[in-house]
Length: 308
Image (cartoon, rainbow, N blue to C red; front, side, top):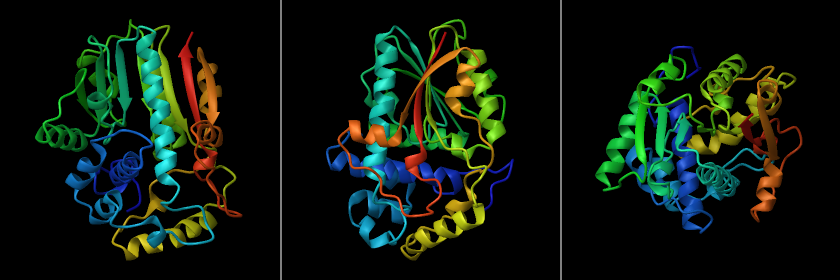
């Protein structure tokens, strides 16, 4: 289904299904000892998408699904998501060690950091996402007997609505330093919406605040139709195995500002880590690229930005 300005989703459809796919990759990474996310597989099972449950549990191999000649596929996801998870886990640990006591997870999806990280006793963690997503995760984790390790406050609001007001109504204090993460988010926003989000975070961030970002590449010069066709070819086998999700309709292409440069021009100081460097520093192999593959995870850069 093509994205619209008013579309909604749950964790089995559209953008929400990508959060479940990422959680499935975290489940595999956990089973392989790369990270420790005990909630990933139970959450995937609870969503109930058969393809993702079978992949997360090991019943379905990426080799059964991925097509040759392209780097689009499942094989690289567990290591990539493990490196990404480690990055943002460490980001929050560093922020807490610096004395920051309010964290914000933008588009939190199936992120279980409020439950699995060792937070300071006086830490407040705000999770922002669509109401259906928030309700599902809260109910499912309660059913598993899980309890947050911080003061978890949910903000059930779409990021296209007035989420800053909803966040402050939940108790967020814009006069105190805060730590934010935008993980797996920007590519699902139109370029101008990315800018609006960064402007809103800036307006709410006191000096000393930090923002961790997963920044996607600029696709203004991308041959979008050729890229869409490559993605379709690489996901045909996924569809054969029951995953009826058209990835080509989920993200937005176009002239996109560099996150680090955009933030630095607005009073932040940013340090970027390309995906290849992040994988290497964590002891993981590089993601292979086929010729003319278009944008892949290799084009992603991770930024830690500090409000001056």
